[in-house]
Image 1: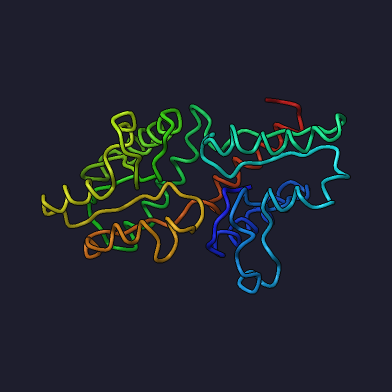
Image 2: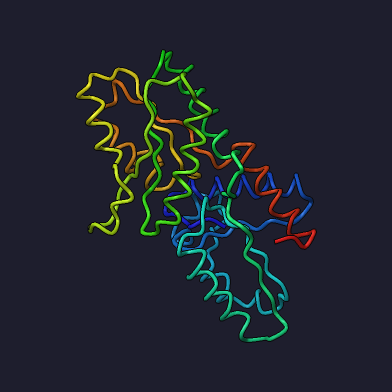
Amino acid sequence: MDNGSLNPEATINLRNIAKALELKTDLPIRPVGLMHSHKVDSQKLGGARAETMDFLFQSDEPMDWEDVVMIPLFFGPSLAITDWLPKKLQAWQAKDSSRSFRILECLHRPGDDRIARALVERISETIVAKNFKKPLVALVDHGTPLRSVNQIREEIGQQVKILLSDRVKAFSTCSMERRDGPEYDFNNPLLESVLNDWSVRDAEDIVVAQLFLSPGRHAGKGGDLEEICSPFSKSVARTELLGQHPYILDILVQRLKDWEKGKP
């Protein structure tokens, strides 16, 4: 499951990941968005309508299910994972006490640097493709109201910085956007501010490393990140997204194997 998106490419990405997981685990994997995806024109999805949690669990099919295992395609436990989703599953479970569900761990795990290594590979690919010499690198995520989720980005960012070492001129973590109020200052700096600051310093080569999994309205074509970067397009290149990177698939496979072994 991912968060869901009105961008058909996000659903296609989720379906491709599900197929790859099936091949690696021999388990049936069903791609489901939490919200929004069911509104996408099915003709843009090969004729097969996207599923979302609400529409799926309002149908008759889950009435015959006994166990549900949810695999989050999320870097960290956002409120969608810790609050919204459990409530939906608890409502389904309440109709039959014999039912059970399990929400597996998100992609990030303290000390595991596979997400960072995936990012460094994407950054290196961009440096080679653009013939950059020693660029400045900004690692950007969406931004969050939860400090705990922000800390995940910061840990990944520290790992990326160490792995890049002296191959880059400067490095910064940043957010695409943030809520108003001093209680959300931990999201600073914003990507736009970082790019403005570096452009004032006449930075020629900048890589925006996208801590995003799928091409939704933020990281997709014509999305928010493209709009933010467009005034600096001569000097800025964005990395490819992470959803189908082998390291991400490896993490998802591990989550399933841990579940099969009865591990937390």
